[in-house]
Amino acid sequence: MNRCNTSARSPASLALQLLLAACLLALSLTSLAQDALRPFPKDALRGTLVVVAAPAITLDGKPDRLSPGARIRNPQNMLIMSNTLIGQTLVVNYTREAVGMVHEVWILTPAEAVLPRKRAGQ
Image 1 (cartoon, rainbow, N blue to C red):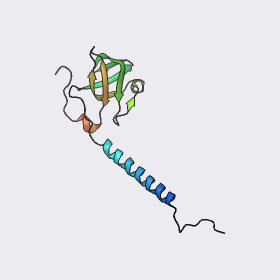
Image 2: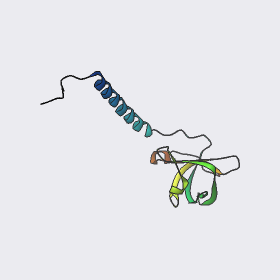
Image 3: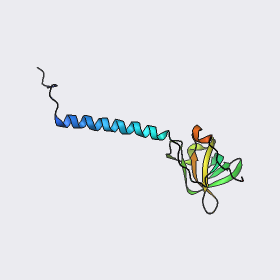
Image 4: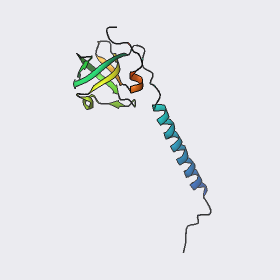
């Protein structure tokens, strides 16, 4: 005995299918947006960052420090913790806070890294 009537669709089933389709469309659009270049602040500088032992870092081979509350964003623009980057050499854009410590860091995608950007001391 077959108890499922597959020939008739309920309005709730149709609504669920439409919701699922909308979610899939939204996910595909966000993946397209991740390919776009991020807008960096005009005062952001380019550098090569190595996290030694947070908050100690080197920028372009010179010792430096991350500020308290420093934000590091990965190539997908998500916040990551500095201790996950220990020992890695990364091409980044960064800004400093008023005291001079590094406050915001963006790890660059290959497409972003080829774009010209001012370096410290230039």
